[in-house]
Length: 604
Image 1: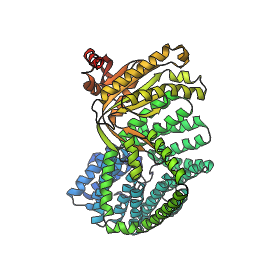
Image 2: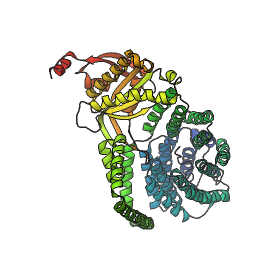
Image 3: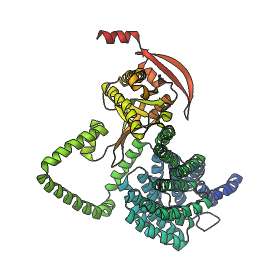
Image 4: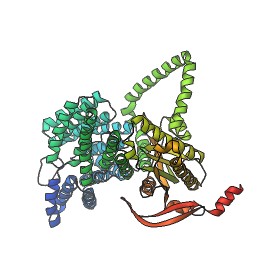
C-alpha cells in the first residue's frame, strides 16, 4: 500500500476566538460551533475566528468545510485581514484536496503561501509549503515534494518557538519523513520521525503523537517487524478514534491489512481492508475509497474470488479517476516548478544535492563505459532482449519516450474506443481447477483475443482476472477505431461461441459479455519498476458499465459509440438503462454489419 500524508500543519497562527489552547481537528468541535454560526451573532474578528475553527474542524463533510472557507476568504478580503485570508485559502485547499480536486487544492495552497509570504506571516507560509509538498507527494512528484517539505521546515525553524510553532514544525518534519517512507528510505524516515516525535512529546500534542506512532508502525510493517507495527498502529487508532479523525484511521487499517497478508491470514487482512472501505464510504474519503478498493481487489484475487476482485477493481478505477485529473495536475506542477527553479534561492537549496548526484551519475557512467568495453557483445544481446520485452509491455512510441527521457508524460486523447469482456460463470468453474489449469484456460482465450485485436490495429491494455480490456485510437491516425473495435468484438464473440462447439475444448467453454464505449481518455505509464501502460477517465468507467450491463454473447455499446458506427452496423436500441453509480445510460446491442457494408467488403 502506498501511504499518504496523514498529518497536516493543522494550526496556522492564532486559533479559536475562545481559546489559546492548541487542538487537533475534532468533528465534535465543529458540531458544537454550528450553533453559534447559525445564531449569526459573531461579528468582525470573532466571525473570522469562528469560520476558521469551523472549516478546520469539519472533517466529515468537506463540502461544508469548503463553504466555511469560502466565506472566510470573502470576509477576510472585505476587511483587509490578510492573516485570515491566508488561513481561508489554506482551509479551502484542505477541503478541495480531501474532496479529490487536487488541481484546485494546489492553487489554493499557493495562494495561501503567497499572501503569507507577502505579509511575513511565517507560520502560515511554512504551513502552506508543507501542504503544497503533500499535493506533489500524492501526484508522485518526489523531487518537488521534498523540495517543499525542506522549504516548510526551513521556514518554520525561523518562527518564534511558541507551542503552536513547535506543532507546525513537528508536523512538517513528520510529513517529510512520510515521503521518505513512501519511497522506502526507511532509515532516513525514522530519523525524521524521531525528531517529530520528540517535538510532539515536548508540547504534549496528542494528535501528533498518534500520527507519529502510526507512521513508525508502518516503517516496522514494511521492514517485517509485524508485532511492533501492530502495537504502534493500534495505539494510533485508539487515539484518533477519540477525536473522530477517520481519514488516518482508514489508512492505518489498510496498513493492518498488509501486516496480516504477510502473516498469511488473508481473511483478517480482508476484514481490515473492508473496515477501511466502510469508513471511507461513510465519510466520503475519495482517496481512501480508491485505495481500499484496489487493496480488496488484490486480496480477493489472492484467495481466488475473481468476481469480487473484479468488482472492487472497477470501483477502484472509478474513484481513482475522480480523485486525480492527471493531465491538469501535471501541467500545473510543471508550470510552478519552472517558476521555482528559476529563482536563486532554489538553486542554492539544490546545489549540494546536485553536486552529489552529479558525482554519482559520473561514477555510474564511468563504470558503464568500463563494463561496456569488456562485455560489449553480452550487453548488446541483453539490450535487444530488454527492448523486445519493453515493447511487449508498452506501446512502441511510449517505450521510445521512456528510453529517451526516463519518464512518460500523461497524454490526453480526445477520441478513443474502449472494450471490456468478461466470462459468465468463470468463478464457479475456476474453483474446480488447479492453478496451472486455470492459467492455461485463461491463456487459451486471451492469446486468441490478443491476435484478434492486433489484426485490427487495436491495443491490449490489461487483464484483470477473467476480464480483458483493450482500446483503439491511442497511437494511430485512423478515425475508424470504433468500427475496428466492433469488428474485433464480433470475432471475439464468434471465437468463444465456436469453442463451445469444439468437443476437444468442451471443458474450457464459457459465455462472454462484451461492452464498448467511446470518448476522451488520459493515458500514461504507472509505476517506476514494474511498468504498466494504462488509461483513465470517464470513458473507461462507462465502458466497464457497458460490459456489466451486457448479456451473454452480445455486444453492448453506449450512445457515443453508436453515433460513430451507426452508418456501418445495425443496432437494436435497448432504451435508457440504470447503471451502477452512473444513472440511466442509452445502450444498444450491435446485431451485425449493414448489408451494403458487407457487399462493399466482399467486393473488395
